[in-house]
Length: 393
Image (cartoon, rainbow, N blue to C red; front, side):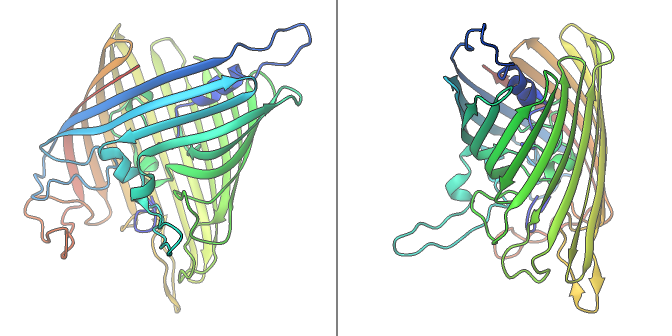
């Protein structure tokens, strides 16, 4: 995450790709056009968490959205509307709660003027995604969209319901959540699709530099069997005037979701990148493995392990700012029991252990007040138990 200069459906778990392919069938003269659709939906997420380090500031640090110790927390409330009518497609998801403020932590804050508003996370945090599109009658159907999108990087989603754990991995928290720009998707077949996009950058509704970011992604989807993705993302992600200069960042992301049986599923995720800059080459490599098994009709058990290593270059000119973390590596292990008494309800009990190369978490008596004196991290590990619930329609 580019949190110092950042860390959501970073990322629905291939459901969006499957829906897209299903909504763009091969055009034939003897077929009627697909029926118009309009859908309303939404979800609520809440949790209680106990951090065994008992930090005096109540913060479970660098965890994204499940980040409060010993308090009942309304994490997110989201309302969603989508439509696909006569080749016109669009979607709007609004959100309020704890999650949106973390979601937009890296949003650039730009000043306004006498006739122009300022922009910051406070302006945008209630919008999770919003885009409009049109499906052109070219081949199998070319879908062109513009607006604010959830990031296509990684297999995890912003909504808890779309994942196997309650918390998200370090990869999800570290890599971007959202992008603003335009994208074009073309289905090569019923299973293969390619997407090209141009965005403002990482986690930026409004751009804070002169360059745009470009992506190319290829996906393969066989519903309930396998889903694959390979993505390349490049652009200048430092703000104007950054000591690192106008450094082009290059990211490669690959992940696979497989369902060998009706009860057993696995996800493998690998991400890496480089950024040559004035101080050398910043680089990172990260990976995660997920597994889930249905042990009863309404009960799932899931496990996840992840690790994220970052290289920060130093030269005679100085040291680059870290892209993701205040230390060289972070890792975590997570185990989750997911009870689903109804097809639209999930209750999850989760244990998680976080470990880092240095002090970046909180425990016990924490120095600072978080206002004029920032809290001072004092632990290299943290352990927590979370009881979370989500329902949706």
